Image 1 (tube, rainbow, N blue to C red):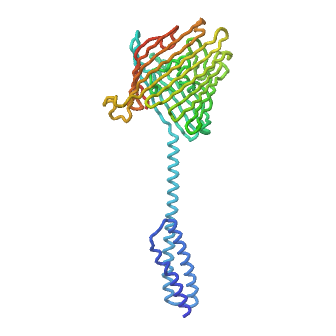
Image 2: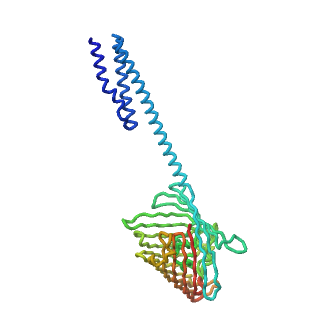
Image 3: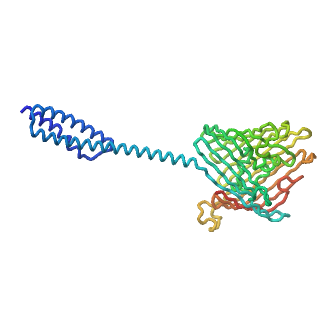
Length: 447
C-alpha cells in the first residue's frame, strides 16, 4: 500500500508537465531549453520508477513506465530536431553574412569609368569661323579598399591620334593613388593637378560657367597644369560651421622659358626635370556651410637648368553663393628671378558673377522631361599683366584684358550648352587672346 501511494504521488507530480508539450512553441532557442529540461525530469522519474519496480513489480506501473519511455523518446527526438534546426539557421546566417561581405568587397573594388568632352564653336572677328573638338577625356576612379583610392584622367586632345596628319595628342593629365590615414592627413602620389589658384577648380570644361578659362589660368598658372609629385592632403572641421581643406605637394616644377609672354611654355614633360630642385606647391581653403570658400595658394621652386633662379608666386581665390547668385574671383602673382636684368613679373586675375534665372523663363520644350533644368547668365572680367625680358631679351610689358557675357542652358548636370561673347583688348604683344572680339559657343558633356 505504501508503494502504491508513492507511485501515485510521483505520477501526480509528473502529470502537470505532460500536457505542456502541446503548448504553443516560443522562439527556437527557448523551446529547445524547455524540451531539454522536461527530458531530464522524465529521465529522473524513470529512474525512480525502475528502482520501485525492482522492489515490487506491478503491471500497472510497467504500463505507465512504457508510456513514460515513449514520451521520453518523443521529446528526445523533438529536441534533436530543434537543435539541428537551430544549427542550420546559424550556419545559414553565417553564410549570408559572408556573402554580403564578399559582395561589398567586390563592389568596393570596382573601377568607375566616366567621360567628358566639349565641342567648341569659334567666330572671332577677322578670323574664319571654326569648330574645335578640343578634348575628349576618360576618367577612371576606384576604391579597392576603404583606405586606398586611385584616380586617372586620360585626354584625347582634338580627337586625333598621336603623330597623325590631323595632329592632336594623347595625354595622361592625372594618374595618382591615395593612401588614407585619417580625414585630416592622407598621402597622394603620381601625376597631380597642381593646386594653385583656380587651376584645379576650373579644370573640367563642361563644369565651367564660360567656354574659355580665365586669362591668368592660361598665362600665369598654365592650365592644364599637371606635374609628377608626392604629398599630403586632408580636411578637418574648424568649429561648427567652417571646414578647412588642404593639398601640399613636392613636384618636379616648371622649367624654361619663363618671360614676358608667360609661363605656359615652361611646362615640362612627364619624367623630365631640368634641374635637381623640387618645387613646393600647396593650397589651403576654408569653407563655410557650402556658401563661402576662401583659398590661398603658394608655389616656390628653381626653374632654370642650373637650378639657381627661383620662381615663386601666390594666389588668392574666393567664391560665394548668395541665393541665385554665385560669385567667384582670383588674383595670381608670380616672380621669376633672372641672372641679369629685371625679373619677370606676372600678375592677373578675374571676377565672375553667375545668376541662375527663373526656371519659368525656359520654354516648355527645354524643360520637358528634365527634373532640374537651369538657365544661367554669366559676366566675367579677367586680365593679365606681364613685364620683363621677352623671348628675344628685350624688355616688354604685355597686358590683356577681356570682358565676357554668357548664357548657359543646362538641361541636366551631364550636359551644357554655352554661348558667350568676348570683348578683348591687347596692350603690347599678344599673349593669349590676340585682342579679337567674337562669339564662342560650346556643347559640353559629362557621363
